[in-house]
Length: 78
Image (cartoon, rainbow, N blue to C red; front, side, top):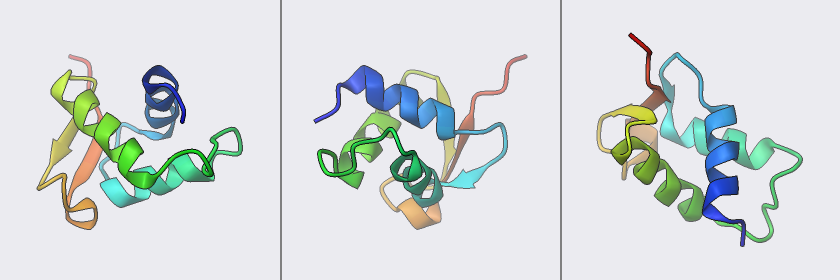
């Protein structure tokens, strides 16, 4: 399994300033050729997403547990 810090890097590189579905962001992480999809599950990526939102690195709307019904983006700097 990939380290949490490495997962964070993949997630943050796939995130944008524009809102996107949580499911799309998770899919983008899996589409990265450097990501080891055999050693990681989508739920692993989602768990790191929740932590990044809690830590203020990402912003979310909707129920994040419902990937197709929630949106995520990078936190906009003031």
